[in-house]
Image (cartoon, rainbow, N blue to C red; front, side):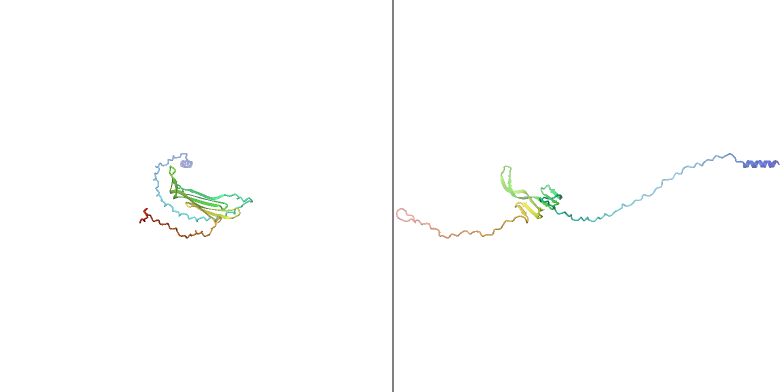
Length: 204
Protein backbone atom coordinates (compact mmCIF):
# COMPACT_ATOMS: atom_id res chain seq x y z
CA UNK A 1 0.00 0.00 0.00
CA UNK A 2 2.85 2.40 0.78
CA UNK A 3 4.43 1.60 -2.55
CA UNK A 4 1.23 2.56 -4.29
CA UNK A 5 1.23 6.03 -2.69
CA UNK A 6 4.87 6.59 -3.46
CA UNK A 7 4.25 5.63 -7.05
CA UNK A 8 1.20 7.88 -7.28
CA UNK A 9 3.15 10.83 -5.84
CA UNK A 10 5.97 10.36 -8.31
CA UNK A 11 3.47 10.22 -11.13
CA UNK A 12 1.81 13.48 -10.06
CA UNK A 13 5.18 15.18 -9.64
CA UNK A 14 6.20 14.12 -13.09
CA UNK A 15 2.92 15.44 -14.57
CA UNK A 16 3.18 18.95 -13.02
CA UNK A 17 5.12 21.30 -15.31
CA UNK A 18 8.32 22.58 -13.83
CA UNK A 19 8.79 26.38 -13.55
CA UNK A 20 12.53 26.10 -14.07
CA UNK A 21 13.70 27.39 -17.40
CA UNK A 22 17.33 26.90 -18.31
CA UNK A 23 19.19 30.09 -19.56
CA UNK A 24 20.18 29.83 -23.24
CA UNK A 25 23.40 31.45 -24.30
CA UNK A 26 23.93 32.10 -28.05
CA UNK A 27 27.20 30.79 -29.29
CA UNK A 28 29.79 33.59 -29.72
CA UNK A 29 31.43 33.07 -33.09
CA UNK A 30 33.75 35.70 -34.72
CA UNK A 31 32.22 37.65 -37.67
CA UNK A 32 33.46 36.24 -40.96
CA UNK A 33 35.81 38.56 -42.91
CA UNK A 34 35.15 38.13 -46.62
CA UNK A 35 37.50 39.83 -49.13
CA UNK A 36 35.92 42.38 -51.50
CA UNK A 37 35.14 40.75 -54.83
CA UNK A 38 37.31 41.85 -57.74
CA UNK A 39 35.50 42.18 -61.03
CA UNK A 40 37.45 42.54 -64.31
CA UNK A 41 37.18 45.97 -65.99
CA UNK A 42 35.40 45.72 -69.28
CA UNK A 43 36.78 48.01 -72.06
CA UNK A 44 34.45 48.82 -74.94
CA UNK A 45 35.79 50.32 -78.21
CA UNK A 46 34.56 53.80 -79.06
CA UNK A 47 31.59 53.49 -81.39
CA UNK A 48 32.26 54.70 -84.95
CA UNK A 49 29.19 56.27 -86.49
CA UNK A 50 29.16 56.97 -90.23
CA UNK A 51 28.82 60.63 -91.15
CA UNK A 52 25.23 61.38 -92.09
CA UNK A 53 24.72 62.14 -95.76
CA UNK A 54 22.12 64.83 -96.26
CA UNK A 55 20.78 65.49 -99.75
CA UNK A 56 21.53 68.97 -101.10
CA UNK A 57 18.48 71.16 -100.59
CA UNK A 58 16.76 72.20 -103.80
CA UNK A 59 15.17 75.62 -103.55
CA UNK A 60 12.65 76.66 -106.16
CA UNK A 61 13.47 79.78 -108.12
CA UNK A 62 11.82 82.79 -106.49
CA UNK A 63 8.79 84.06 -108.33
CA UNK A 64 8.57 87.83 -108.11
CA UNK A 65 5.26 89.46 -108.83
CA UNK A 66 5.13 91.87 -111.74
CA UNK A 67 5.70 95.46 -110.57
CA UNK A 68 2.53 97.44 -110.13
CA UNK A 69 2.37 101.12 -111.14
CA UNK A 70 -0.26 103.63 -110.20
CA UNK A 71 -1.75 106.36 -112.35
CA UNK A 72 1.15 108.72 -111.57
CA UNK A 73 3.66 106.21 -112.97
CA UNK A 74 5.22 105.77 -109.55
CA UNK A 75 6.47 102.48 -108.24
CA UNK A 76 4.57 100.67 -105.55
CA UNK A 77 6.41 99.61 -102.42
CA UNK A 78 9.88 98.54 -103.60
CA UNK A 79 12.18 96.47 -101.41
CA UNK A 80 15.80 95.37 -101.68
CA UNK A 81 15.93 91.63 -102.41
CA UNK A 82 19.73 91.22 -102.35
CA UNK A 83 22.85 93.34 -102.02
CA UNK A 84 26.60 92.98 -101.52
CA UNK A 85 29.47 95.37 -100.88
CA UNK A 86 33.13 94.30 -100.88
CA UNK A 87 36.02 96.71 -100.25
CA UNK A 88 39.61 95.45 -100.29
CA UNK A 89 42.72 96.97 -98.79
CA UNK A 90 44.35 97.33 -102.23
CA UNK A 91 41.66 99.81 -103.29
CA UNK A 92 39.62 97.38 -105.38
CA UNK A 93 35.89 97.34 -104.72
CA UNK A 94 32.76 95.68 -106.05
CA UNK A 95 29.12 95.99 -105.08
CA UNK A 96 25.69 95.07 -106.37
CA UNK A 97 22.02 95.15 -105.46
CA UNK A 98 18.67 93.90 -106.75
CA UNK A 99 15.17 95.24 -106.08
CA UNK A 100 11.72 93.74 -106.08
CA UNK A 101 10.86 95.70 -109.26
CA UNK A 102 13.56 93.76 -111.18
CA UNK A 103 16.03 96.65 -111.09
CA UNK A 104 19.61 95.42 -110.73
CA UNK A 105 23.01 97.07 -110.71
CA UNK A 106 26.54 95.82 -110.26
CA UNK A 107 29.78 97.77 -110.38
CA UNK A 108 33.47 97.11 -109.78
CA UNK A 109 36.50 99.34 -109.45
CA UNK A 110 40.12 98.27 -109.99
CA UNK A 111 43.26 100.34 -109.58
CA UNK A 112 45.55 100.34 -112.61
CA UNK A 113 48.80 101.94 -113.64
CA UNK A 114 48.37 104.25 -116.62
CA UNK A 115 49.92 107.30 -118.26
CA UNK A 116 48.74 110.64 -116.95
CA UNK A 117 49.65 114.08 -115.64
CA UNK A 118 51.26 114.41 -112.23
CA UNK A 119 52.29 117.44 -110.17
CA UNK A 120 55.21 117.70 -107.78
CA UNK A 121 55.26 119.61 -104.49
CA UNK A 122 56.10 122.85 -106.37
CA UNK A 123 53.16 122.46 -108.75
CA UNK A 124 55.33 121.51 -111.69
CA UNK A 125 53.43 119.45 -114.21
CA UNK A 126 54.88 116.28 -115.66
CA UNK A 127 53.56 113.40 -117.74
CA UNK A 128 54.27 109.84 -116.67
CA UNK A 129 52.94 106.72 -114.96
CA UNK A 130 50.18 107.27 -112.41
CA UNK A 131 47.87 104.99 -110.43
CA UNK A 132 44.26 105.47 -111.46
CA UNK A 133 40.89 103.78 -111.05
CA UNK A 134 39.12 101.84 -113.76
CA UNK A 135 35.41 101.19 -113.47
CA UNK A 136 32.97 98.85 -115.17
CA UNK A 137 29.43 97.79 -114.46
CA UNK A 138 25.94 97.13 -115.71
CA UNK A 139 22.39 98.08 -114.83
CA UNK A 140 18.95 96.77 -115.73
CA UNK A 141 15.55 98.35 -115.13
CA UNK A 142 11.98 98.44 -116.41
CA UNK A 143 10.35 101.73 -117.30
CA UNK A 144 6.83 102.63 -116.06
CA UNK A 145 5.63 101.82 -119.57
CA UNK A 146 7.06 98.28 -119.29
CA UNK A 147 10.08 98.83 -121.55
CA UNK A 148 13.22 96.96 -120.50
CA UNK A 149 16.62 98.67 -120.50
CA UNK A 150 20.13 97.29 -120.12
CA UNK A 151 23.15 99.55 -119.80
CA UNK A 152 26.79 98.47 -119.56
CA UNK A 153 29.79 100.73 -119.26
CA UNK A 154 33.53 100.91 -118.78
CA UNK A 155 35.64 103.84 -117.68
CA UNK A 156 39.42 103.81 -118.00
CA UNK A 157 42.22 105.75 -119.67
CA UNK A 158 40.12 105.74 -122.86
CA UNK A 159 37.27 107.59 -121.12
CA UNK A 160 33.68 106.65 -120.38
CA UNK A 161 32.32 104.02 -122.78
CA UNK A 162 28.60 103.26 -122.33
CA UNK A 163 26.75 100.62 -124.36
CA UNK A 164 23.02 100.05 -124.67
CA UNK A 165 20.40 99.49 -127.36
CA UNK A 166 18.50 102.56 -126.16
CA UNK A 167 21.45 104.96 -126.53
CA UNK A 168 21.46 107.23 -129.59
CA UNK A 169 23.97 106.47 -132.33
CA UNK A 170 25.84 109.27 -134.04
CA UNK A 171 25.02 109.49 -137.75
CA UNK A 172 27.64 108.36 -140.21
CA UNK A 173 28.45 110.89 -142.93
CA UNK A 174 29.85 109.54 -146.13
CA UNK A 175 31.32 112.14 -148.42
CA UNK A 176 34.35 112.71 -150.61
CA UNK A 177 37.07 114.97 -149.42
CA UNK A 178 37.69 117.97 -151.69
CA UNK A 179 40.78 117.86 -153.87
CA UNK A 180 43.06 120.87 -153.97
CA UNK A 181 43.37 122.39 -157.47
CA UNK A 182 46.60 121.83 -159.33
CA UNK A 183 48.21 124.98 -160.82
CA UNK A 184 50.49 124.49 -163.84
CA UNK A 185 52.73 127.41 -164.75
CA UNK A 186 56.34 128.12 -165.80
CA UNK A 187 58.68 129.56 -163.27
CA UNK A 188 60.31 132.87 -164.30
CA UNK A 189 64.01 132.85 -165.18
CA UNK A 190 66.24 135.34 -163.41
CA UNK A 191 68.25 137.65 -165.74
CA UNK A 192 71.97 137.06 -166.09
CA UNK A 193 74.20 140.10 -165.42
CA UNK A 194 77.68 140.23 -167.00
CA UNK A 195 79.93 142.53 -164.98
CA UNK A 196 82.38 145.03 -166.54
CA UNK A 197 85.62 146.36 -165.14
CA UNK A 198 84.70 150.00 -165.74
CA UNK A 199 86.74 150.27 -168.95
CA UNK A 200 84.31 148.52 -171.27
CA UNK A 201 85.82 145.06 -170.86
CA UNK A 202 83.95 142.02 -169.64
CA UNK A 203 85.27 140.32 -166.63
CA UNK A 204 85.39 136.57 -166.93
